[in-house]
Amino acid sequence: MSTPKDAAISKANHWKSFNLDAETRAEIERMEQHDEKLFIDSFYSDLEFGTGGLRGVMGVGSMRMNQYTVGMATQGLANYINSQVKEGSVAIAYDSRNNSPYFANIAADILSANGIRVFLFSELRPTPLLSYTVRELGCTSGIVITASHNPKEYNGYKVYWSDGGQILPPHDKGIISEVRNVASWADVKNTRRAELVEEVPAHVEESYLAKVRDLCLATEEVQKENNVGIVYTSIHGSGITLVPKTLHALGFTNVHVVKEQEVPDGNFPTVESPNPEEKSAMNLALELAKKVNAELVLGTDPDTDRVGLAIRNHKNELVLVNGNQAGSLLVQYRMQVGKEKNQLPPNPYIAKTIVTSDLISRIAQDFQVPCYETLTGFKFIAGVIGEREGKESFVAGGEESYGYLVGEFVRDKDAALSSVQFAEIAAYAKAHGSSLWNMLMQLYLKHGVFQEELVSITLKGIDGVEQIQAMMKRLRENPPAELGGSKLAFLHDVKAGTRLELATGEKSPLGLPSSDVLQFILEDGSKISARPSGTEPKIKFYFSLRSEMKEVEEYESISNQLIARIAQIRSELGV
Image (tube, rainbow, N blue to C red; front, top):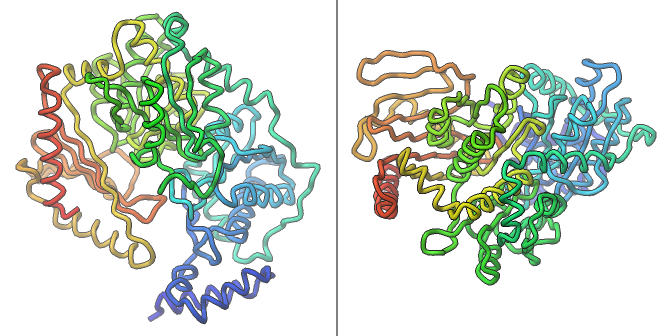
């Protein structure tokens, strides 16, 4: 029986047949002789080109992000594009990560060598601008080199199709098949045809900014409160190129940028992880906000598709809000003020992922508009927008992992657009004698307090993959009878596509595509979801508990009670 070491030796020997650069060849030999674990982890398989593209640790090996894995993936993409259209074109963007411009240029070399026209950004730019560029320039496809919010050792390669969204069926399977068919570096054409590579025209970004301005619902309120205090940090990422522009384009004048994190840097020297979901990444912004008495704090990840948010509570303290809370505020604002000002589009709807707060579903129900649920990943929301284009109008939506969108001209989560939206909401609330915190409390009074928490367990390497699979198998085959003192009412197995009612044993279809997700729905309405990450060596547990609230003064007590119940459930699950 073949072992991981056997597989690594075989894969490494295959790579040695490539026309490798001397540095790569020397590193393979060093790992073979002196670092067996790293050698196996680097070569035991191929870095999988999944439905989101590539993502992995940078380094030498078939399981790593490097010029060869990026190059062979790009050749596969080029083969697919040429099988679909006669004269293909691809827009390419990249963020601040180490090697991002290098990988972007490798992709440009290979695409142009295959006769495909390339529009390459001359410097780093946010992922959502790439999505917009694909649509604006009528490109066949798009690539952005980024590993989003992952630690500094990672990079990635995300592929978009002509609708501006990340690849979906049938294109995902077609591209994956072509990538797998590229078995050797000898199959890769990589001599750039300079006449087919050009910079993205300046008018693309200008038209994007104009569309962001046009989304403003509260023009008068923004003019009145344009000095609302805002602190912004790009956390060394690409957001610095666009977020301040979007805020200034709408007229905000009191914007403070965190200087220590302003310069793009793939080593992310001021943070452990460039993830605005983590408080440590927002600490410098919070400190500056205290100094300048800002009312709003915004922080974006390296490729600017996620935004973290801090607001002032009833005690005038700066508090971080999570992605579920921020997304709910955004949806409520767009529906409420859109209705007030008669600016709702025809046949409006909301969209969210299955692990995102059901508070958003309740808001949609309150306004009597549909709320469509998708698998985890914003590309599925983009798919809903595409399916309903011309028949219904997407208002707003998002996912709990700090990714949101308003309108339809971008087809991915957009932290630049969302940042200016949150600034607008702050100005609107202030103009009406309220605040973002008060708006959140009003939502809880109406729909109940939703206390949510995400727990991520990192398990690296081949052993980690096996451990994650074993955890999901155990939960699937032996689900808990009760959690936190409440009995299990339903088990949603998204992989099997079934909804099991525990009381009757009756199974019914979920109506979702298959995905390795389990959801435990308790009798009290609480929901706990388990899902292996598709982009990181992690298994994620999503906790969502709800309780009625009659008075705002009860919030702190109710929140603490729900937090204690989440801790109890975590203990029972062993996470």
